[in-house]
Length: 224
Ligand code: AMP
Image 1 (cartoon, rainbow, N blue to C red):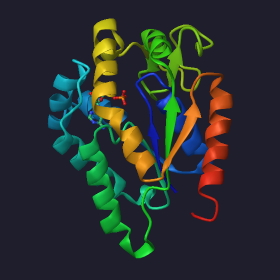
Image 2: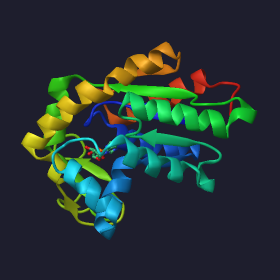
Image 3: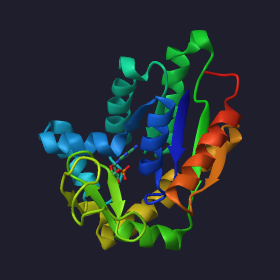
């Protein structure tokens, strides 16, 4: 099963994608995590991406598409994957369609479903402000809605929590602008392709996850 999770920064894509991928045994591909990883390692890709990420802007399509296509060619993606944070522009979506058409032509299979996690703008700004991430395993927490058991420590691996530079207020505003300008048009792109499923992203994390899972099971019944 090939699934895209679509939604604004702060909609809960990362949290939901990780959980759903675990439950359905799919690879979880998060381009934001890949860029942060490259930054940590100090690779040329990481240094280039940093310039854009710090300002809340998108990394250029050529760089992002090349990185993503290389990643999804790995064996762990062969049985299915959830794309989290990709595509973020129409150009990226078209490049993905083209690559999947080519790779999967024999099975006549492309993206099975696009889950659009819908959250209004006011709620998004509130959520992004209080977000903390584990430095080690990238698990996300929130001061209000999903605090860790011990302040500053990850429940899963004990790693220390930090606030990303791009979760600071001015950058948050720019990231939301970029989302509405460049990424939101994908909602229509996938709706027209008959792939879009809308899920209400406001509510308990577990309830949202259950909704996503039942939507996916319904929408892709009979496919694998
Ligand atoms: P995320 O963790 O998904 O919020 O991504 C963090 C940052 O990484 C974004 O604000 C962008 O600067 C960059 N990024 C992640 N995915 C993409 C993408 N598909 N296209 C361009 N930039 C991206």
